Length: 218
Image 1 (cartoon, rainbow, N blue to C red):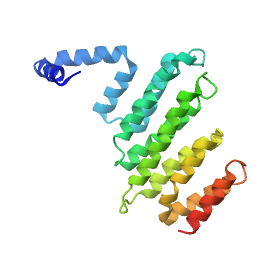
Image 2: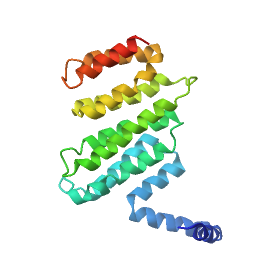
Image 3: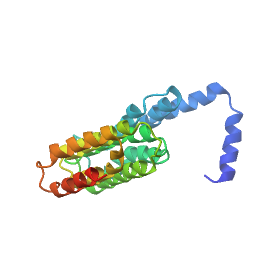
């Protein structure tokens, strides 16, 4: 839609009766569950995490058949996750709300690894989520007072990736937490977590040793 069309539509809508606009919105919401969820979130203050999960699940369920997604539909299945990512990428400075949707994305997408033919689209979403987390951490100001809660959201993501054996994402997330260790409670939590996983996966041991050395020298 170009600027002229947008202005024309704005003028048209401004001149419509409220009940007529409500009817149009309800018609669209009835035809598309994603629109329904979006309107509920925007106008009722629905919990952001619940909203994100609903949007992601709706796009997945739309194309899933017999608990499986065919190759040609995987990209469409990821449309909900990509919508949530786009929303989160536009609110990087709003640290906790932005990070709160990341564990949901990891959880919902990792569950599809054995339920579709095309994991490339899944990995694109996971990579994008990891970059989002790194960007949020990099943008956290020195006077931010809720770093421990921010870390807890990332820890939730790491636990999900580790349980599923997705080592690449796990390592990226581990390294993203290092700057948060300036807070003593976070450092202690992170050290305990690193020690708990150190010997459980040979592919991650070297990274864990490197990170432990890094945070202990801070």
